Image: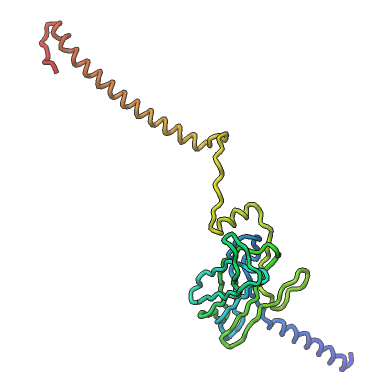
Length: 260
C-alpha cells in the first residue's frame, strides 16, 4: 500500500473518530412538555407544564405559556408553585364564547411564572386547570418561552405537524379526544357539578349484604325479647312456688312459714 493511500485512510479514520466524539458531546435536550398529553373535548382538565433546565451554568428564572386565542379557553386557573408567582393575562375576544355560566368575552392569553429558579439539571412542573376545552379542534399547542438567568431565551414555539418529523423546538401540545360517556361524567365532577345518583329500582333484588344486615338486626331484637320474657317467666314461677309451699307444709302437720 502506498504512503499516500495510508495517509488518506488515516485521515478518514480520524475524521470518523472526531465525528463520533462530537456526537457524544451533544447533549440529549429535553423539551418543555404538557402532561397528560391528551384530554376530552368539551371538558375540564388539569395539566402540568414540565420545564427542564438545559443550561449548564444558568438557572431558569421565567416561564411564559401562551394560550391559543383562536380556540379560547374560558376558565383558566393555576395551582400555586412554591417560590413562583403566576400572572394570567387576558384579552378581549373578537367572538365571545358561550359556556354553561353564560357568555364570555375575555379569555386567558398568557400565563407568566416568575420569582423562582430552576437550577441546572433540575425541572419544575406548573399545574394549570383548563376548561371547557374546545370541541372544534383536535389539538391545542401552547407556545412557551423559557428565560434563563444569563438572558438566554429558549423558544418552544414550533407547532408539531402530523406525519412530519418533530421540530427542533416543539411547542407543548395537548391532543383533544372525543369524550366518552364515562369521561362526560368525570367532566361534570371536575366542573363542580357532581353526576346524578342512579334512581332506585323497585324491582331490583336486595343485595346479599343488605339482606344479611336486616335479618341480623331482626334476630337480635327477637333474642332480646325472648330473654326478657324468659326472665319474667322464671320470676313468676319462683313467686308462685313460694306462695304454695306454706299451704303444703301446714297440711303435713309441719310448721307453717310466714306469708311473704
